[in-house]
Length: 131
Image (tube, rainbow, N blue to C red; front, side):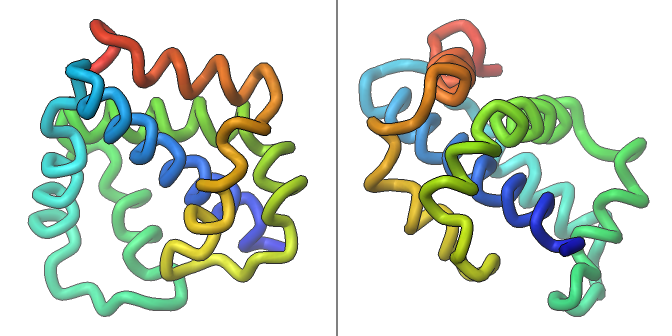
């Protein structure tokens, strides 16, 4: 299934976002990376109709033009996706991707994820690791 790796990456990206929110709530970093990616998305893929992977394809084709802040966020998301892949499959393998369904599925399981996923989430949430 071609959407499975993207769904896992998306789910892990949303886990990353959740960990950033937790870090900010604890007084840690967090920075403006989500805003930076929104700005990049709007400027690089303006006029692209969402759906059927068009936004993703646009961003992938323009990766060389993505800002440093957004590139950093995406790199961390890929790292988390890799480290959390087994956990996303374990807890949310039957969840249809899109509309934050995977993130909603994973939120109650964040304390149950395995060591590699916990380590990745802790790394990206740690003060000093957030631009």
